[in-house]
Image (cartoon, rainbow, N blue to C red; front, side):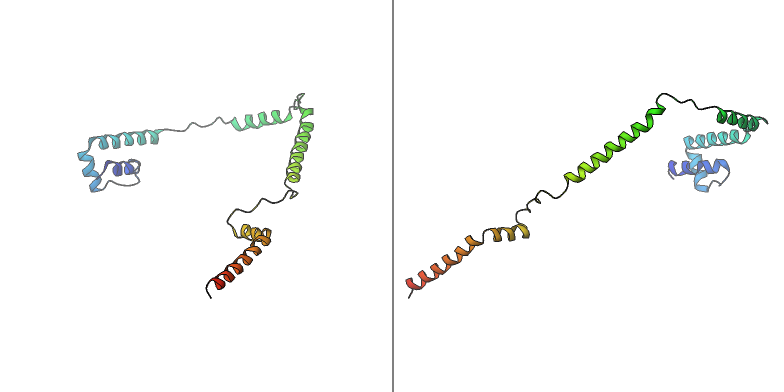
Length: 154
């Protein structure tokens, strides 16, 4: 049995939530570091069981409520920056709005769209449409070639 497996179960065994199995007991007899670790965890758990939490002062709640009332009753001190806060926020909002409108206007489709990628179907159709006259002349060359073959091979 591995030490890691035993060490995972040690806190539950030391707290009394589970018991040692025969395999765990055999491992603890043969492995002194694990046995010492179990004793240390058991001592820590026993110390924690003995610990008593201190009771708060009976006047704690009364003093806390009084302090809260005092703080709420104090007038808030306004700094010289207080009057500046709203105009600065208004100016910042105006700048953000202006930048947003500028970006929107700059992105309007006034400029032509970018050309399609070469080799795509749209690109091929545009090339055929733009060069229709040139491709039409190729058909004439094919007809001349056929006529020359007929004349050469009667």
